Length: 630
Image 1 (tube, rainbow, N blue to C red):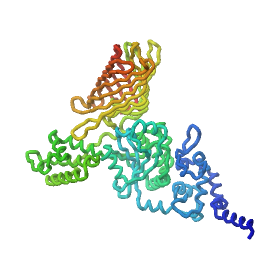
Image 2 (image 1 turned 180 degrees about the vertical axis):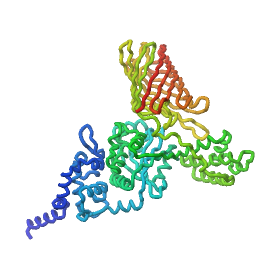
Image 3 (image 1 turned 30 degrees about the vertical axis):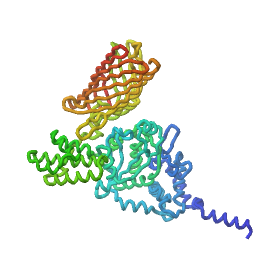
Image 4 (image 1 turned 60 degrees about the vertical axis):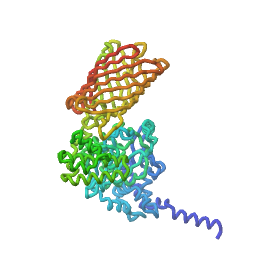
């Protein structure tokens, strides 16, 4: 056989065995033509499955992993990706799980229905792996889960949302949690924030046992959990899981404000119920709580279930005991008091002894979850306390039903605009302010955590009519405060950080716009007289040309209290003293009385009077404003 004949035979064999031959089959050609005629690549459901959204530069998929696309142009070209997907169904393959029919089960199911595709023409007619997975999970319903905020975690300050797929038994222990999150080991808040803002982290969908998430959030992270069952039927639940299956181990660039844990869940729900278009209803920035609100607005949510965290449970039981009873429970948990001896102290009412033991048991479980006890210490104290508790009889832990607070979705909305007027150093002004996110210390706490303030990109403009002057009064990039009260069982550190531009009176007795960075840390407590009160040590850096040497660096402290006078009237009184010893040296004293009156859930009136003294100049300001949330 001549070399030329051999090469010709070899080339023919290659052509007959390559996937390209499938493209020449009449049946495949007819399907491709039918898809073009029906313009399936413009179908909203197809755009949802591939996560296409229109941006400044046209249509593109928000998924960034090349493995997700079957066409080299698939990220930007829905038609090319659809044609490549149909062709991929006809390609031979030895590994069923890696074949396009199985890898893209949601695409395959939809295309098969739209084109009336006959599976007998395919080398892999079905995905048995997915069918087996559904038989194993037996999904019956889906819930949206909202773990509340965790102020000491940069990634969780706004809370988090995830989905759970429940089995026919409805047992949460058997449910699977479906979540989207950034993959990072970064723990330093500022670095995480910067990288998260600009998409430097990959985000992945994950499927994990829900009981593990419950333990992580409620026991370790001290976060209450709200569950919102979604009214999806069996077919919709299956479609949702099909899409989860095909985006598993596929990454997208994670963006803190928009393409985040909440927004990406909308694609799953849109895939479950075509036509919802939840991704089109999202604001330019997506806050986890707003995900719940959008779902509720679209009729997906009718009820909520409250799951208090372990720390909330401890605090509730402690609230049922007098101070001495709390002290004894703490002593038992610390191994300083024998619970058996307590159970025999009949001078203490039996009900109180029961609660002391129950509180000690709960607190021991909390300490163990936080790894503050060795396993040996925990088991020895835990079992001893259980024996003492058993000797007392009576109801178990189920008797403690923590009263459910206002659900988060029923609190005020995230965006706020304010219109106000006031007087500063004798000059009248009018003010317009806008705050896209999301809660401050004076806002109503209904649905929010007391003592938590999270403000991003707050902007205020003032017009002084006598001077005919329009000024930027302040622009806060970040203004975060976490005031968490300390007690016998929990000793958290309260903290704050504020940075942005604001106006200050300087040595020339005039106010100037300067940049300010103001971090601080300290302690907070709570009692009936003052409400939530605090003290903090603070540092303060000012930067700007009007300052001597262009900067001022100082240290000092602040103190104040926040008191809820009625259900809708809140008062905040504070004083701050900062000594700037470097740069533009001076001593600055500030004090203020701030009030907020909630009219409805989304309207309020604020009133404030403040005083400051710096560089030998005094300044007094009074202001009234009307606030509206939307």
